[in-house]
Length: 255
Ligand SMILES: NC(=O)c1ccc[n+]([C@@H]2O[C@H](COP(=O)([O-])OP(=O)(O)OC[C@H]3O[C@@H](n4cnc5c(N)ncnc54)[C@H](O)[C@@H]3O)[C@@H](O)[C@H]2O)c1
Ligand SMILES: O=P(O)(O)OC[C@@H](O)[C@@H](O)[C@H](O)[C@H](O)CO
Image (cartoon, rainbow, N blue to C red):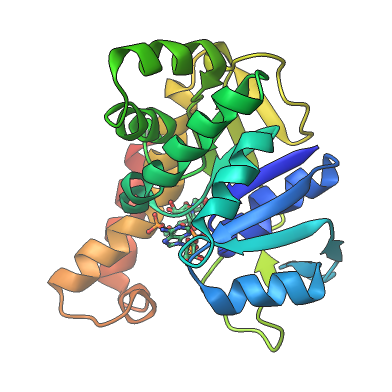
């Protein structure tokens, strides 16, 4: 089974790529960072370390990479053959990658009649819907109809803290042991991808809202309040008892 994943960053390697490997996929990472892509192709594996007292680690194998700036045609080909397509690039980049995704899906319609699902794994409400909108803006009515017969864009909620980090091996990634990947089932086209760790739900709204308004509220409040108080970093802000009180109040309000 072949997966194409856009964004070989923290969530790409540390979360989505890990679950895809465990589910038996070969994952082709697509990224604009040549150093990371070259290293993935050289090593063909990378280490994921669980940030817990017992530092368990896992070697993720069956991976390769494509630099989408240098080899866009290889990305188009990979999409045409993929069994699943995922992203973790950041909300603002979805519009950018929509061009290659559109070309890949067009090529796929010519060569491969299998349905495929494109799942945006970003911190936002309606990430896959936004990607679909950007793809459909590039299509005429006839192509839109063909795309909607074959391609699903189920929305998702992803939760796993993978902080910015620098490791001796640039591919190694340290991750929070806990994770949650929730995907909107009614939007799936074709067979439901069997990926242990994905929870399929009928209605994603309560899951994405719970995630963003709990976990991310806890991260965002010290950023906003800290900025207002003139702190340079969240770490500095967190040492201020007044900021701690505001955070506790905000989290108390969403219980
Ligand atoms: N890190 C976390 O704890 C966390 C947790 C949940 C959700 N998220 C979300 O996951 C997404 C990714 O976050 P991250 O922490 O992995 O960021 P990251 O910066 O580590 O990774 C993003 C990757 O996307 C790549 N990229 C940028 N432009 C691209 C393009 N045009 N084509 C292909 N790749 C491109 C970057 O080079 C980078 O490797 C974001 O939406 C973030 O909000 C992050
Ligand atoms: O990448 P951002 O700015 O959307 O969010 C930064 C962190 O708060 C975020 O990545 C959390 O670690 C994550 O949402 C946990 O699941």
